[in-house]
Amino acid sequence: MRSIWNGAISFGLVSIPIKLVNATESHSVSFRQIHTEDGGRIRYRKVCELDDHEVSSAEIGKGYEDADGTIIPITDEDLSHLPLPTAKTIEIVAFVPADRIDPLQMDAAYYLQPGGAPAAKPYTLLREALKRSHKVAIAKYALRGRERLGMLRVVGEAIAMHGLLWPDEVRAPEGVVPDTSVTVRDKELDLADALMDTLGEVDLEDLHDEYREAVEEVVAAKAAGEAPPEAPSPPSSGKVLDLMAALEKSVRAAKESRGEKPAKAASETETQEEAGKTTAGKEGAGAEVRHLSQRRSARTAPKGTGGKKSTSTAAKKTTAAPRKSTAKTAKSTQPAKKATASRSTAASKSTAASKSTAASKSTAKKTAAKKTAAKGTTAKGTTAKGATKKSAAKKTATARKRTA
Image 1 (cartoon, rainbow, N blue to C red):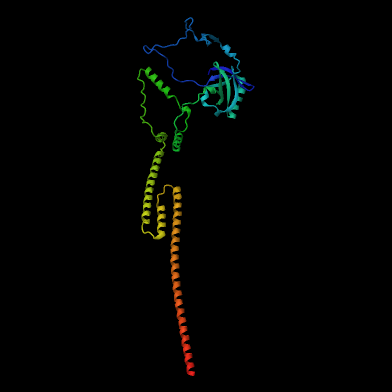
Image 2 (cartoon, helix red, strand yellow):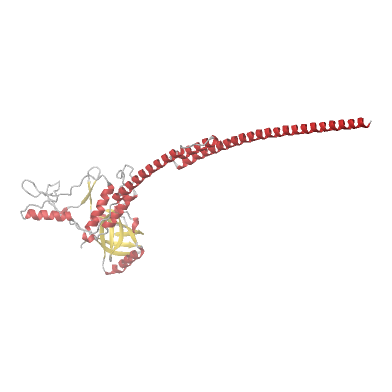
């Protein structure tokens, strides 16, 4: 691998000479621009505007265009003497946990190669320190005409550096989130989790660029004078209206691809449960209605008399009334019971009072009759005593006359 930048890592007072090497490469198929009429190659030639001659890459340098259009030449030597400590140095400024780095900031990746034998010891020291701390190093460096931000981490036995965008270069996600309120049910989340578990993990080494392979097949077929392969027709699928159904189909398809027997769909189970609940609710409602009607017919049969009739009727009406709510029924029943109890008490008191009055009147009549009878007996006794006294007086007078 060819180095693209030479410098050093500044680790406190430790300086580690390194070379910067590209860690990635592109495998995409490159195309050339051609003239569609005759297949001629279209080229972009670099021509000097002053003498109208084509120039080579070795004759091309850098220049800054001023506001008035004046070109100010800038050489590599001018850039090498920039008043920056990072011109030829990767300056480590901090060590932070890896999860502190937003993946949106990550840019190009490089390997840091130690520059010679003297760099081996400090290079290994930095690598092992990063391993043991489970942290990454944040650094600043200058490359290709600008100062950049980087992140150093351990990859195998090497130190890699990821170029990072500056925080103000990452755009905020404004206007990209749904602007409508959406509610996700727990069962939908459970299905999503099941799908994630079914798909499982993957070895990234097993993934490859199928698009590039397809392009290469087309190129090979055209080069051999054959017809390019036709694209397979996409599977026909209607518009998905039910998210639960789509998740369940995805889970079943993933399990079938792995040879597993798919379980019963959650939505079907839910539908059956809801249907069972609805049927049970309807049957329960019907039974309750029939039960109430029977109680009403039984309680509208033979009625009592007096106060008991009004009490039982009021209590039965209150009991037989439909229950809309437990709390409302309790509240409405209590006053009715109180009113019924008060009416029953009043009726009982009235009945007791009437009975007491009647009993008192009867007792008075009997007492009067007894007193009258007693008076009659006394009068008779008095009369008899008077008659006896008169008879004795007459007998005494007759005896006196005879004696005389």
